[in-house]
Length: 115
Image 1 (cartoon, rainbow, N blue to C red):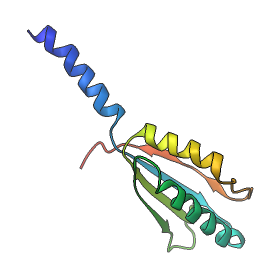
Image 2: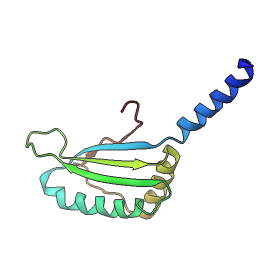
Image 3: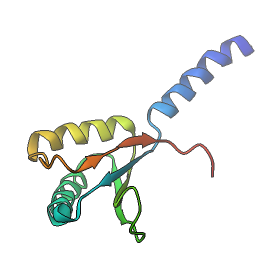
Image 4: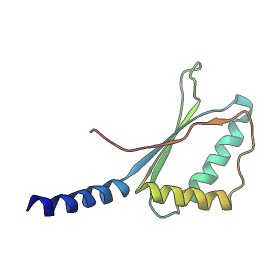
């Protein structure tokens, strides 16, 4: 009996983790001279992505310490990794990229493993 249940359980767990909610954490460094342009670009991207399937939320954080490595950190929640990837692909086709070489982004997707 256990031999019949285990493959089903493995498939269920695989399907659950493949469609589990993900969080984008994207810290970025922005020279002071480019802050306005970056904020305007972020707002356009946020507005576009908010209309995409699987979007849950996003928040932009600004450091209050002048010596922080990252000035801003964007945190966005998506229903799944595939929703996020599809939305980013659509955004890249619709919005022009931010072409400021001094702005550095470090995006990564994360999953919750503890509460």
